[in-house]
Length: 469
Image (cartoon, rainbow, N blue to C red; front, top):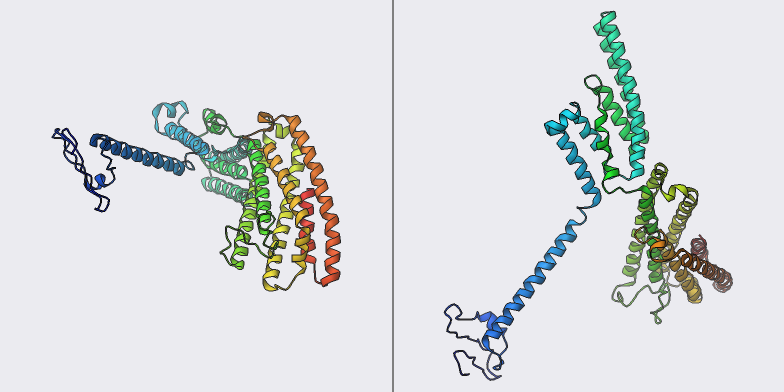
């Protein structure tokens, strides 16, 4: 035992791991827990108190790491909830609620504070600035129509009630007018309200004003509270549209990445034949059919996401018309041509997906079909070059359109233009080489095996059209 008031027993290696006992004159520090003692080193050169402090530090470090991971995961879970759009809507609804409940705002708004809540709810606070301007214009029309109908109905009712003294006719006229107006508004909302939310908002406020006008009139002081969309973190439709275009280009690039994996064009599989084996080192254990199905599911998901983004982009395109201060409005003609090009790319993307699915189904059902495998063996280098250059072009375009990383922020416009020119030349050379080589290979394979090469030709046509676009 070491000299002093504390010590540790060291056992031979053949004996089971010992339970280390720490003795101290301090009555509050008597024994170490058995499980903790098993984790402590049996080095006699270190003091027992030093061992206990190391263990405490380790536990503190583990506790800190666990707390950090817990806070991080909680933040990641709450991040989709506490977005700017949610906070904007929360602030707007809070203002509407306070204006409805508190006495001072209620008096300031002339006793019509409930209209503030109605306006806040129907002027969606998380919309873009362009969508808000569109909604305001539609609601101005709706308020005008509602006022004319309501005021005209009131005049007729007052005339038949006071002048002619016929209450029944006055009530029938009022009811018939409101029924006709409700039918017209319902028809407009059903036909155009699903595609244009602003039209639905205008119809709703027209309907509300037509009935509310009989008891109370709206107050102009309630109008500023409907502009929460433009006051708190305004989001323009132009920036939303740039993000949509960037996301669309990202989907296209991901599609070509998946296409390279499907066709085994990554260059890291020399022992596999292109297309005939879609296996990669990460999934060699999977059967052939399962590997094909996984690639098909990936391509199908990418196309669906791309179509959803394209639909959202179509809505934002219309809202940009109401944002005359943005650069996208100034150059809307050029951007319209870009959007049309993206739509054509989407059509060719669907053609590529369909041809790949049919080619894989043909190979799975008829393994003896050698025309396709021979074609891919001979066309793999030029096809790889074409896909690689296309992905580089998509990456550059996404960099230009990404609103979080504008072209002028980190890269000069002159550099972007020069790189674009080089990529255009490279892409033109890759397309030309692919087309020339494709014609010779297709003729040679057809004369040799005399099989139907329509699927191969359609796939090549879609690839060339995408690259040209």
